[in-house]
Length: 225
Image 1 (cartoon, rainbow, N blue to C red):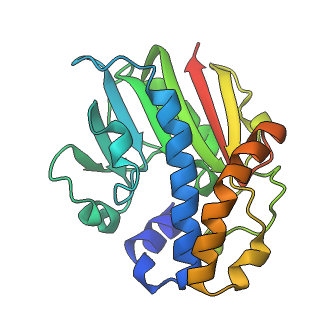
Image 2 (image 1 turned 90 degrees about the vertical axis):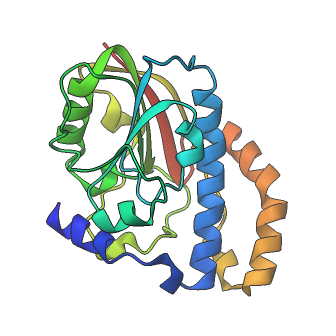
């Protein structure tokens, strides 16, 4: 975990190549749209508590801003970049600073591939209420796109598959995947790459339906049993 923390404490996306930033934004958009569909079914009550576990600098804040949400990340650097002034906690996903059965919903986006995912899932299960929901996004081990777009190769990360989440204490109720853009397109100048992506978006939706769990990013909804 120290390696992961150190990496993100020095993480500065402004220094990334333009094509990486464009592809990251595209991936975030696909992930956002998929999770938004899942979150819409939850009723926003005052006592409905949400944990964004690994919130980073708040890239997905708009998904949960209308809920009673706690935002947690291991990196103080990323939390400082997150413009929200309150309800932010710097803590380790392997040792969550919450009582048992606290949250109704936990989001965990692009986190579990960087940690001991089984230990993390056990901690999340502990803080979830009975029948509480967990929505995770991970780099997909079964992806048809084998070249990852992020610069995370410098730190530990282990792509995961749908099979890795078939564990005691959780039941998978939904799964899908996104991002089927071939890596060859990254060779194009940024302005052309951006146009390619706009044309590609409808294709990605179609491929997501045909190859359900074979995209670069795997989205899973689970319920605590």
